[in-house]
Length: 331
Image (cartoon, rainbow, N blue to C red; front, side, top):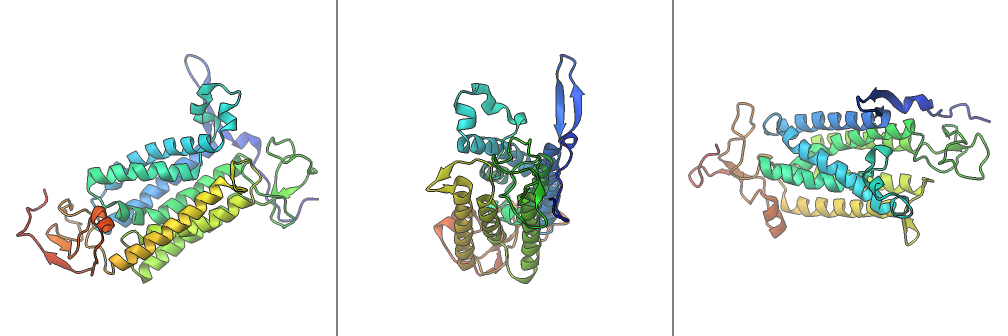
């Protein structure tokens, strides 16, 4: 018997919205899942651009960084998925299926790792501090992940364990992912919905906290890591899809624990090293000189701004000093 508030899965026809025929034969299928991911990327870029521009960055600079982040994020997402599901690709399968990303198979943690490399490259090219960009990205990243989870709903995938809760998710028993031995009409935890709500709440929390306390110098990104890691560690643990295990725990749960730990370390270390606000999101000497810039290129903090100097140590008081006589103005 279906619960009164159960969540129906979309019709199978919604998985693919269009099929574009090719002149040489075959078709290009436009999947709803891909559009959800694309929409999430667009929202993340818009949110990040607005947050970074209000802090003194050049309008549009986010696009220069996003190109690297998206490209390497997709590669990282695929590599991580293949490595954590080796049986699907290395046991009796054609070798080229490793590259058949259109057939599905990407992982958020791989996307984060690959995207981080892309952001690092983009930031080095544009002069934006890596952690400054990460802070601006944090809420937009959660919004993007929430939007992408809608794709799991359209694909009838990555649902949780059976549940008697009234908002259980309806899954057709003919679905290959439907656990064997369960009767028709079994409801499952709608993990896609749980994560959407959790991620949107996290985005709102970061924005709220940013107005109350200093969440610069990487601390907003640290909150993101802690929040997302906490939620994902739970949602991952109740999913029924197959996954590689380590010490009896799913690999992605371990990755969530690592994200939480990294977030705590970043927040504690950066809170001690930087007690003041950022004078600019740029590295010293690479500030953007524009009419809308919040700071002048002659301003710098009393301690070093660069991420390299953060690693070496030091204490930031948030004060700035005019140093135009000690270096040439930025072009």
